[in-house]
Length: 395
View 1 (cartoon, rainbow, N blue to C red):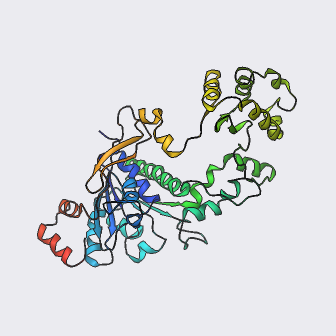
View 2 (tube, rainbow, N blue to C red; view 1 turned 90 degrees about the vertical axis):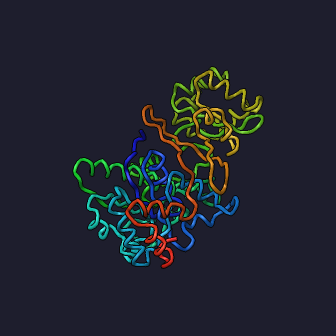
View 3 (cartoon, rainbow, N blue to C red; view 1 turned 135 degrees about the horizontal axis):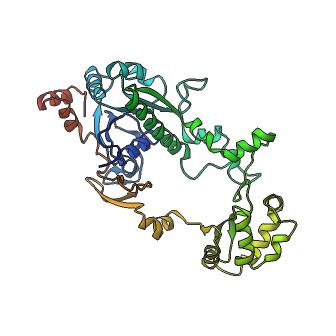
């Protein structure tokens, strides 16, 4: 049995933040009914690369879902949606605030149909506040939160993260918030509205930066390849490239000096005696370390670090990461058969449960693939479904 088996989720989100949230819920066993707009569906269906005309972007983030296409601007489509909402435990949407109200599928409307529903809205800035009316985009959130001002190298153009961290972060924030609200519902029988925003989801991640700013007003700048607080805790150049080195405490620093570099005298060197000293003299320290590491390739130094108990590792490109034997042994690359794409690979499930492991059970749905199945399950006859299709209420 899967941990969320028996929970039904009505998903009217699209692109990334909402679909990532519902994918996680689906991986853990929830039944996900993905409702797409009748004209083109989820916008990520138009994002390449494509295989046999099917978007692989859409396929990567919409597994374990049943897909239907509804015209929510029609009365018939709206009535079908209300019928689906009656039996849903959770609803997830990521429209700009005001859109669901104009469609009459907002929380206040749905809770009259299903008072116990956990209704999650994911938006750029949340449902309240002076920016609530604005559309939300990951790149804008990275800039607004201060992330881009501290990413990259000092004196150079602000850099974004290599992936959509705020879209994924909002999806994960929504996931644990939904589960908390669902636990509350189980205890009390009461549903509620869960309000998640992109720009707020990532702000609590700035732990060290908040510590410095709230203490002495320090405004963090870009740290490039180095850690903001620890040293040496960064990328380091070797004979054949770069590796990551993490002396996270005094003990690992001393082991690095004695067992890896064979420089025990550095432990008592006034420039490097404490982490604060090392951080203040990090430029000099880095140059001295790299002078030694230039004599051997990455593999040698990583092996020495591992033997000494000093955190280290390679800097992989994405292909190297996906071929890493540890990721493969942990099932982080999976294969499944898609009805249009064919055999495809996807990222696996990161959480390993001892009793109720998640499963990738089905590929992403083709556009409107499960419309008949879902509508028949709520009592519509084949003739009624065909009539709705002819009237443009479903696809």
